[in-house]
Image (cartoon, rainbow, N blue to C red; front, side):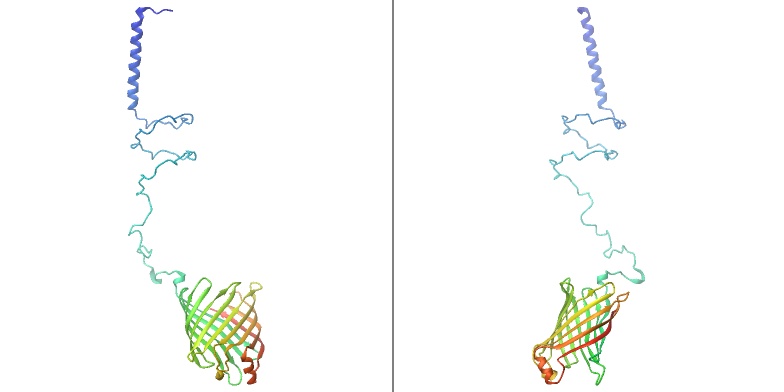
Length: 330
């Protein structure tokens, strides 16, 4: 069908009207406020915006506080090429607290009351008494004792220790070696001691230093050296092991050695190792474990030149005895 020439001006005028109307609509849309529009039901998953250029978009005035992004999946987002060096995070929480954030003693101005300021358990001075042996030897007819008392903290203590025997017949002589020492941990399993001592058997004072702790296989070990005023040096070595049969019954074997640096005929002392003492106890610990009666067997023998010296004085070289007693602490 051919269009008549008289209709051409009308068609051109209609096109111009439609073009002008579309321009006016676009202009009005650019100034529209979309903040009240609900697009929650729209499906954007099929929209391809990979070719869109967002670099020139100004979003500084946008309010994102009401946007709910809890259902968004960020696992596929690649931010490896992002440059965070220019990001200002000075307003974020962290760093040193302000000077008035809390009081130095964490009390925040609240008084401690009648009991005073609390202390950490390791810093609190405490005291204790431990009696490792208070028993009777039937064959030797004597009472053996070994006790320790201490006062201080887990890092520093003062210890008073005494050990010896008391005869229950004839002159009832008491032989003891007592020491007052400063105690301090050296490592996890070992503690050091240093102080002064007094030996009633030879009536001499001494300077003492020692190390006490737990050797491998849970063997309780102690080594103490005594320097007497006359230059004599005494060395005491001891080891003890607790073989637990159940919650209450415990077998405790122990051994002790004594050595001297020089001869002392006035006190029946010879150079080198003088004697060895051993004992095996069967102990029953009560429910509180603070009281443990025991029964055992002890054996003592002279070593080295001390054997000949004892024979010269018509003294026994070896002796054994049935023992019974108790150990406790509080």
